[in-house]
Amino acid sequence: MEAITLGGAVGWFHPADGGRGVVIVGAHGYEDLCSRVTLRMLADDLARAGLPALRIDPRGTGDAADLPADADRVAAWTADVVAAVTWMRETAGVAEVVLVGLRIGALLAATAALELGDVDRLVLMAPPASGKAHARELSILARLVDGMGGGVQADGAIEIAGFRLDAATLRRLEAIDLTDLPRVPAPVLTLVGEAGSAGLGRIAGAAEILGAEVETLPFDGYARMMCDPTASEPAVATVAALVARLADDLPAGTGRSSIPPPRRIGGDGWSEERFVFGDGLAGVLCLPAGPIMPRRAAIWLNSGRNHHIGWARQTVDLSRRLARTGVAVLRMDLAGIGDSPAHAHTPPTALYHEVGKADVVAAIEEMARRGLTRPWLIGACSGAYQAFHTAVDDARIAGIVLINQLCFIWDASYAVHLSAWMKARP
Image (cartoon, rainbow, N blue to C red; front, side):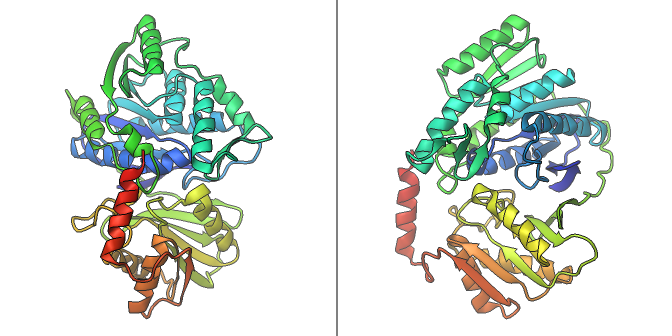
């Protein structure tokens, strides 16, 4: 897995030698937290099958650069998807490109495919029939996640778990209707959804009338994947079926071009570099901009199974605010969470366990390699547990910030309660 930049957008590239590349556009906000592991597994398995894969965070999402408050987000996101497909052709050197979109990513992928006109296959995973339908679904989800106070805000925005889609963005999304496209977005359209979905049927019927070859796959495990970021279970069967479909009759590669080293992205007072360290762990180092040497260092650990952007993207925002004050911050994913694959010895829950300390130690050593010694550890919930126990054993840690720590000693009986809670999720 290699970090790349696309202007202000960022991506993780999973290299392979085949001639068919796959660009993956994920969901937004809360749905991204739930589905991140599934899409990382999809990219890993595609690469193992010989298909180079690129997962992207468009601007204003994930680890990407921020967008101005008044930006046309839908236009910016679509442009980032177009740039990713162009990168896959020109830099990765593939002959064919498959564009995969999940949820809001499906709307963006279809829009980008129409603009490009040369996408070989379009894969829409759990696609809303339209932007209007997606807004209705999100307003219901907001009430389930945030209680009856969630949903549509007074200014017309929809906010779920702190992730906000403003009214202007929702209006622009409403202009996208997958059942009423002006022309075929790709010769082959693969629809991945729950059996019997009326919306999926309307999308398929409209695409067939336009002349597309339409095929469907069941989205086994969708509800379990989307139930909650920490209780989420990856849709393993769906990933396997989709990889088999996309790897069929794989063309030979034309010779992958060397991937340029990722450029930093930056903003007001901060600069960031993304990389893989230790045993395949994903990290993002946020530094003060310019020649200023950081006066302090910190490592931010996962809370539950939320990947390193944090609930409401707060870890990204706070890292950049800290960098402006002179603090270098590494936000990372422990093994088995977010963008970091599990190790053979990683427990299924990947939360309260002894082996997590090894990942934190790897982060401390990576910071030291870069001249950033005596870091603080910051963690909430399970991240606080890992921070505390690492600090007990490692004198290189200058201090710890523990937020909402549920326990200092993990008892085996707690695992029963955690497992029962996870199984009780819809």
